[in-house]
Image 1 (tube, helix red, strand yellow):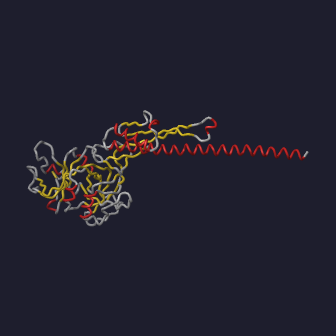
Image 2 (cartoon, rainbow, N blue to C red):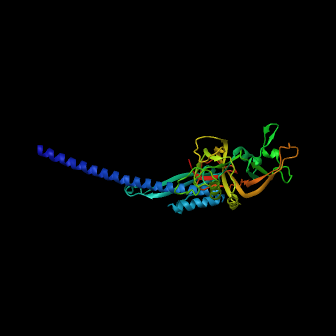
Length: 367
């Protein structure tokens, strides 16, 4: 009796072991299929991300929606999506935002034994071309946002470069500080509107951008004490580090002369500039020395086109101004507020908020 019982138990054990082996192989097989599906989904996500970002960049470059859609299709196929799998509606553009779906049909290895031969895999990415909340490629001149905002699109701005106290320009009427053009003639053609705005040392600053050790964006103009040579270098090459908003950036209110050649070499180009809302924000290490050292609270990035260097720029007081207001001539940099969307930060990012016409634009993935 005991012999037969032992024999039955051995048979049951073998049967259980066989079921266990089958179950184990089934789980392994399913794990292989599931792992393959997840791997293919990662591939599709990478394809969707690349396509959405490429399309947003096209929007920033203002090539049009059709070009953006074509670029997205191209990047989908470059990243493993078959042209036949791109469906109508997989690439959509609404305003400044792009939505891309990447899809494919993944073949199973084991699940086919139970009738599941393929699995549809898809991934979605969203992107936008919007106002930059971080950027590089900045010029080292910052403007006060309130004054820049009041300048009309296409209006020139004179960056006043006073060599001494006799060249400093201010405007005060009835003891109240006023815009420079309220005291001096900025309407040279007498058409009733100002031809330029004056950015004095109160409304602009020279930036002491922080050093950057980025291996991708080499900084050709490492800080060396806010000297004229550093400023000249940054006017020529732009800043290659990334500034994220809001930012407190060290700088100078003071004078930087001797940059004529560097400014003129950028004539006709579009450059991004920091826009600050207050001075002396703290928390920014500065290499600048002297009484003119400041820090600037930057909240936006504006766009200007460079006109060039003016060796002798003259301001004449308006008729009726007190005798203390006299003709002033100094060196100046002339730029124009640009609202054509030409300032695009290839190394920037955005939260998707549509850019103002004058604002530096950036493309990035968004939620």
